[in-house]
Length: 527
Image 1: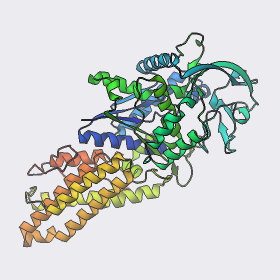
Image 2 (image 1 turned 90 degrees about the vertical axis):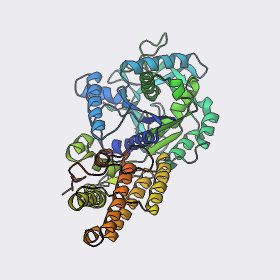
Image 3 (image 1 turned 60 degrees about the vertical axis):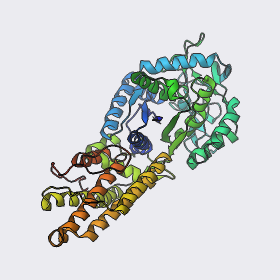
Image 4 (image 1 turned 180 degrees about the horizontal axis):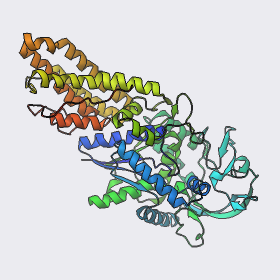
């Protein structure tokens, strides 16, 4: 049994989840369900990112507190993830006591090491608003690509920025040109890890192209040391004398949520975080491409600088963007489909299917309601749902609910065994679309096998041939539902109940003799 850590990105608790979040995070649940079926010990963790400027800005705009804003959206996130079947072992939040204590202890050790130092920096100040600006409150022109950008980064090219690097820097609230005032901050010396990070990247040549390209660019252009403290009012206190009025910068604490959430889980299970971060474990990190540098540069640098939990990411599952009807999703323009609305109108497996079959794994992919309807009705209802329904209803109607016990064709057994091995490799490499395509190729084969067997004819002309066809189809259905269970857990659970299937990643036999439950359609057609 292997320890598997799966970290899903922590969404900002400043607004509702949209379809882009779901498309990026869903692979984490597939990995968790698959590894559990394999018998591995899974630590699937994530949580709500409750600190940071976006939350304070929203709280100010709505005349409330950051605590109330973050708690509201944390609760909403939990409801959405639960409705969609995300099987987190621990979904936490950065504002919880466990996380604050872990981050405080981590940073204390960090400051006592040789990879942090105090520096005097220029900090953006708005003379009109008369306040120090957070990085997100400073806007200007990205010096790399010339696009409009915020002080924490450029959405267009992905560059990580600082306000004093921007061109024509202004206050986002009033538009006044900013001035810069000196402030002392603690810096993480990321530049000292150039060789480590270069070796780290070169040891993972099979990562997705966006991960390799982004990370290589950051290393080649020169790694910059970054401040890990900030003059903020909302966040985790800096555990250092002289820094009582400052907070730990969000990027230096939110990625540690993977560790704090995993530590709480380890305590529940009677193990240790050091064991989970040993070499006998495998770590996956699942997120969108805008989070790549935080998982391939920032998190590894923090772990290396700390020195106690040095298990750098094994697999980076970084998605491209999900667009909406051909346009980029924009929450500010309300051009989005909100997850909380989608779960009210559609079955969870239908939603999961679309965002896996059309997942933005290698390039941006698009969500359109026309395609959503077409794929649901043709693939889920017309292919998979039809195979299950016509086979099991046939047993009820013409075989007195008997599940025939004839010898399964050897070619079909081999096909199932091959698909289990092939799909497992694809899932572990992050090729979820290819894995799903392989299952639906097997579903099309099964429907063709049913048609060729013509059980509706042989039930009166050759009952043994009829039972053989049905037995093979039931065997195929049982094993296909196992293959689909990481992807479509709700409908797969229905089939497992009907056929009394075991839940292991190996060929499953049909052990019960009869169908004792009523057969209902797996998926409702979208009209």
